[in-house]
Length: 269
Ligand SMILES: Cc1cc2nc3c(=O)[nH]c(=O)nc-3n(C[C@H](O)[C@H](O)[C@H](O)COP(=O)(O)O)c2cc1C
Image 1 (cartoon, rainbow, N blue to C red):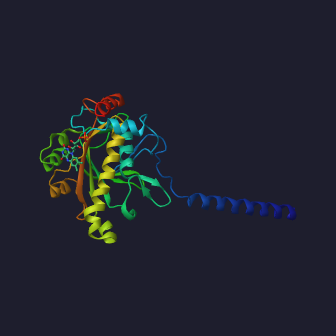
Image 2 (cartoon, helix red, strand yellow; image 1 turned 90 degrees about the vertical axis):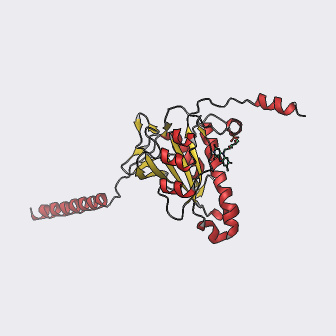
Image 3 (cartoon, rainbow, N blue to C red; image 1 turned 90 degrees about the horizontal axis):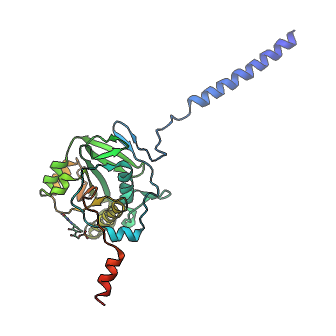
């Protein structure tokens, strides 16, 4: 009897210890993070987890180059969040996880650019849910849009861009800023007058090509009052705006074919 109860006590202690260990392991597990594993964005209060980058377009690079045009007339259609995610990734997203290298090249991998998106009312949608209008900032490492401030800022951005109508009419505009110091601290004045302006061109071209591949139209804008644009997007003091890029569905998509180009070239030979 005594022997039996000894065994029971022993078994009971093992079971109790195991249960405690399992419980401790369970409560110390990190909380599950919301995931965007599919092509569905996750809309949270202050941020948007963008759908993960993937192969989406049917166009080849040469077709996108052929069809790229500066587009200034858009339909009323919003920009799909999946497409916006791909356009932002093409501009400055992560393409080499080990070293954090990006879609655009950067002198000494100093990465001076910061990317904002000014989204108008019903300007960006996921399935049938519209994103709140406002100013957002792209965070490449988590591929996330962070809400900077809520509200309709397209008109103010258009006024800052010398009243260029397409800035007010596009469903959204990307604004690329640069923190020059990141590059000039390594390369001095050459960083300011050469490298940073070159880099914004790389990012701008990637935006053009990805937008074209997804059947959107874009135009790069360099004519604007820097201080006014910085104020519209609540840029940090060190972030200097370099490009505004309105994006929307083109009213008349470009239709050039390679045959057109052959005809042009051969008639000049
Ligand atoms: C540095 C730069 C600044 C530009 N600024 C403006 C601008 O302020 N407004 C605008 O409508 N287009 C602007 N553009 C677009 C040009 O007008 C356009 O690239 C040019 O007309 C050639 O047309 P394409 O881009 O369709 O080939 C700019 C382009 C570059 C490269």
